[in-house]
Image (cartoon, rainbow, N blue to C red; front, side, top):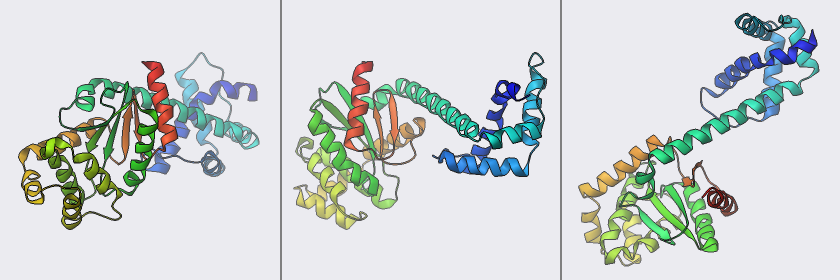
Length: 285
């Protein structure tokens, strides 16, 4: 009987995926395998027929397969061999990661022009670099502030990275105000002051208000009155709305987020990991 269990374990995906969806409220999160294992085992103890019923349904749908063992038999097998549960979950999560990566690659290809050549996003680093790193950032985001120094270190060390910055204000009015100011700063001195302004806005501790943004603008040499006027333009509003729309298409709903090669990286990553992504992008061409 137990020799047939391995054949029928494909049906466990029904139970595993159902548990993951239930435990995360239909939102993907990283769960320690041991935690899932414990919860799954507790569930089996309280519901001994569930897995058996799932396997039986699988067997009914596949008449060529051997007859399904009973729920009690599978429960006892899994409790005796708990590593099977962890292995099944690991395989399931790996397949999910592969599928998500493939989907991200397709989204990048479909939206490539808007991602890499939108005509308004700031380009830093090496404009002729062989690898482009696109960063979605918010000046009020603590993780973006941490990422800023890591990105700078990575770009400087590599020397061949084209950095595209997407102003993506999602954390309130202060975020929107500072993003508008950053974009509007390009109109002064041919955009030469943007890099310094961008750095200073990111290095500021705490949230941004109009007072902090204008104080920083004045310190870097921007004409504050002109900046206030330019940042209210419909052009600036349209540019930010285009970035919102692009992020939605790419399923980016937080900051920081990065695009490098054919991968979307959601969340903070250190310089060393960015190097790894760059190497991968270069190998893929």
